[in-house]
Length: 149
Image (cartoon, rainbow, N blue to C red; front, side):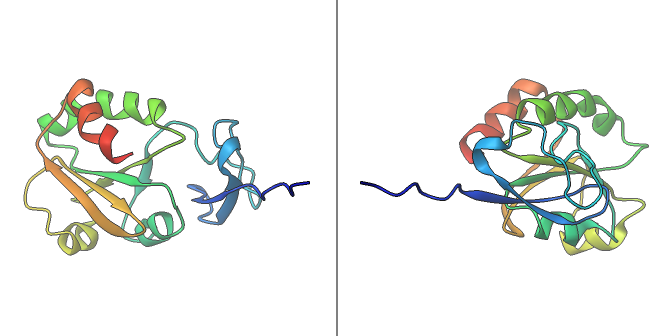
């Protein structure tokens, strides 16, 4: 007789209220909602980050987090945005996608030493795991993320 193993839980930060939610790994694809405010946790859209919520979202999410450091005036950033959004949907249960406007959130951008945009930084457990500068199309972004996700 074997005892059932408890479900592996994954901590996911709510993008709306920043509450950390524990979600069974096998249920990540079932549109989990925040236990505090009811907002969708993994809706397949990039989360908007800024100086005030960056550490809460990244620190309360056990999934890898890929952050697009961008600015509204940057043409390559705007060109890459559709591919970034597309992959946010494809990787919704494996990687949290987020965007940080470097003009509006200079403290976080400085902390990560962002010198050019767009720059993608992959974080896991709050630690930088990989970095890529320059605009990528969906294929190149997928190739960069696949081995790391």
